[in-house]
Length: 321
Image 1: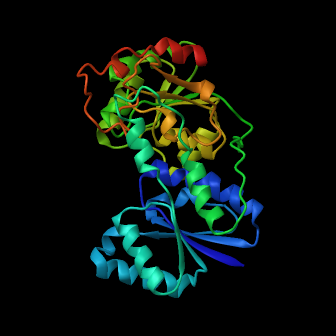
Image 2: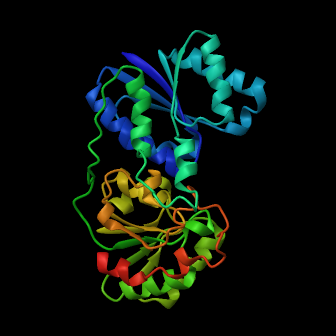
């Protein structure tokens, strides 16, 4: 059995995107085992995948070079890996890579395509093209080790019971998120024909969604009420999930639920569309040459008018349902 030590510590959506890649890679290479090192609270993402061992850590316990050196030694002692897969490529993981190379281990890391993404998000670049999907970038790390992996890009539903619509109106950055008044109106329209379940997290989001629940009949806020395992189960039982370009789209992919995704400053061209999700279910303002201005939605609007948010038509989302 070949053992691969893989690590990716954040962000939540990016860690979630490794899961369908692991599943299909390991099905095609049954004599391989992956040890996934990530944050403790991501463990439920990897539950039940054959040949995956999840090692949850608190990254604050391993600060600086000496902390990372201690982590590297602990992982080698516990797991004795044959290969190292750096699926993150940030300063912390670059340090780990160097330590492992010095110990004679073969290290393979993701090519995040930084220059391509910088070109894609240049507002003066009018010739924007689809870049390699992030899930393929993860698969490339295993291909570089000499393994074969073909990604199906197909959803695998884990539940036969499907009812209701999920709606996750929040995202980490303003550039990824519809104005709340538009999201409220979208929820109101959908709830006239469907039961709508709200997804969110954190005190402020929970307060907002509970207020919406009280104002819109036929809605229920699940924000702050479910564990990650319970949330994945609920999403698996939805007819469709509506999500910004954020983690909930990737959670829908993990459980085989169709997701209608909303893209504002960001764009599927950067490679972050959920595994197996259809480009037909992408909703965006198409005729803005400045899009995407950002890979993560964390930049201020260079035009100043946030046209990608303000000109967005919620009716287009309703039509997809």
